[in-house]
Image 1 (cartoon, chains in turn orange, yellow):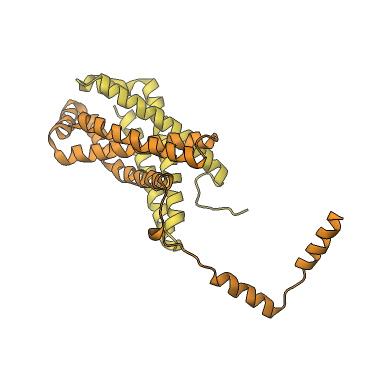
Image 2: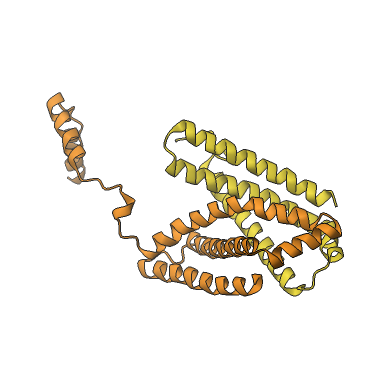
Amino acid sequence: MLCQLCNERSAESFKPLSTIQYKEKVTVSKNRPVNLDLGTFKHPLPAMVSISHRITGVMMFVGLIFMFCLFDLSLDGAEGFASAQAVMQDNFLAKFIAWGLLVSLAFHLFAGVKHLFQDLGHGEELESAEKAAKFVIGATAVAAVLAGVWVW
Amino acid sequence: MVKSVTSFGRSGLYDWLIQRVSAVVLGAYTVFMVVYLLNNSELTYEQWSGLFSMTSMRIFSLMALMSLGAHTWIGLWSVSTDYIKPMGYRFAFQMVTGAAMFAYTVWGIQLLWGL
């Protein structure tokens, strides 16, 4: 009985549409409201953490040139090592960049750990996802203060 | 199945796995470096260059360097496919990213083995 129903229904739905019917269908779907303007959305916390995960990743990519230059200098003999130390002790801009990269790294790392836990099926519910996002933000705030103390 | 010729592992599944494995390597390297630097606040050049002369540290660093290249490539590739719609600009961005990560990898190897 059920199968019969199915067959009847599918036979019905596979009937080719006439051009007019087809055009109507397209118009209907085209008129459906579509909002792709991200600026008008209310973003839940996990969404903010997700986009920040990407932003911190891009920031660290840009900052790689700073890290590699500093690393290169630090391994360029005793003199190079001394000047790398001097830069990190005296130059405000270098300190600020280092601090910014450390904070980005902390956020990216915590959000990454969250991601791995979610891959394993934890923290995917509405409530637990919110908690996990809050944890990432809280842990980064602590790390930002500690990184500031370390750099300055 | 949609296949993308510009992705790192030639398939989303490989990219997915490589991104996670490289993330774990980079996380371990980060934790190691932070703990090392915190424990050696009076670091000297001899200690610092000695650390990177060790074979074990070169293995770990090269692993981190390779992971950095792959992780950055996959990450920025994902970002570019989501936000850069015109094919030409997207491809140009991916070329620049790829060239940059290749250069960093070579630079890193030269630093480690030039000691």
